Length: 97
Image (cartoon, rainbow, N blue to C red; front, side, top):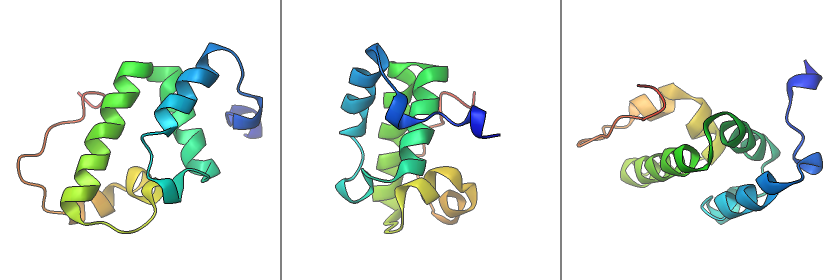
């Protein structure tokens, strides 16, 4: 399975610049989280820049509305944490549609 992991350290080319710009959207406390970096790199490679930005914007908004103070990666990967929050006026994830 290690061959399926996107290694950030070897991530070069045009995606590197886009990836670094997208990582600026991540809260400072989570910027060095390798699992989060790999998740974002995966979404960037599969969904593209615009969809990844929109996804992160929606998730950051949800985290703020929810008042979640844990790890950003845990919030993204764990639907249970997101479902525990009562998010009124929730907008659907464009990638799940």
